[in-house]
Length: 170
Image (cartoon, rainbow, N blue to C red; front, top):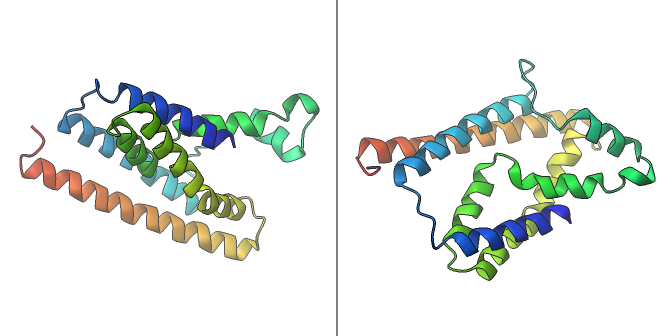
């Protein structure tokens, strides 16, 4: 619920300011490359790489896992609200569409629809990473998802480098 609310609010803001913001193609491509690097790191983590770790602070996750006290029951909602800041190519794409939507209500509908539409796949990814499902299946699922993410990163980078090579960035 927090994720849907935050995406809707952020979409409203993006749609509102979208008419006055202008991103150059070079800046957009640079952002895609930076996000792609982060996506590769996340994919490697999903596939079992141990040389780094990107995760939520233990302060949040430990109280949620325990089914915490009444004062902390709001934490899942807060974490859902904060997912708008996660580095994700698909989220950035939805945000870009919201900026170009032509108005705040359209931007809000685009982002809220994106949040609703991605809820089920994200639930399954979360369930597999939390080992709620058979651990052997969970490990395979995470490795396949990591490989798929790397495939999308290669595709995105290939597109950006082709734009750069063809001189379409400047």
